[in-house]
Amino acid sequence: MKLNIIKTIFSLLILTSYSASACECFIIKSIEKEYNNADYVASGKVVQIDYVQIQQEQDGKSKVLTSNSKDEFNIFKGLVLAKITLNSDEVFKGNKRKKEVIIYTGSSGGGDCGFYFELNKQYLIYAFKDSWGTKELRDNNKKYRRTLYTDTCTRTKIIDPQEIEKVRLLKK
Image 1 (cartoon, rainbow, N blue to C red):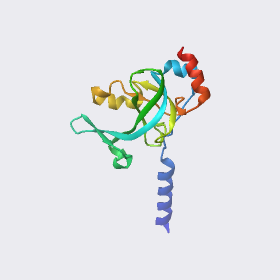
Image 2: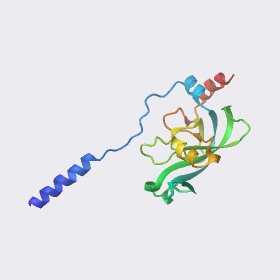
Image 3: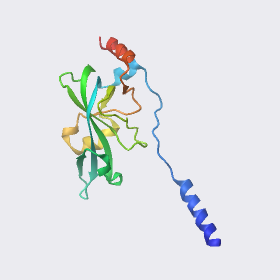
Image 4: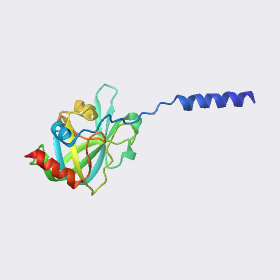
């Protein structure tokens, strides 16, 4: 009986001491502020979703693994990001020469603030270079130096014709 009470108390201590990390966005900026701060603003269709994981090696270096399923990665072995391929319809700000653009976002569905993209859906995306979300990726390899990142704390969303009209006015 005494052992069961001790087990119960111990279990309660473990369960109540667990600290969950949640995404906290302090403020979603106005369209104008977000447009001015963003490095890339475009509308387009998500044509591919892949995942990358940055794993630290024993020698201090890191390696980037790629997969079309995040289930192939062990989240305890390193950061996992969703790698979104966007077929842009209209680029409002940023590199207008590229029709297909790669944008990264968190993928854990937890406290990383990753935006949940769906394949073949249209989005208005506000993306940033040199984001905290891609620091490990950029530090790992020079080819990721100018990587774009977005998350739920930006104005990125499913296509909104009214917001697109406002962005077009800012572009002029």
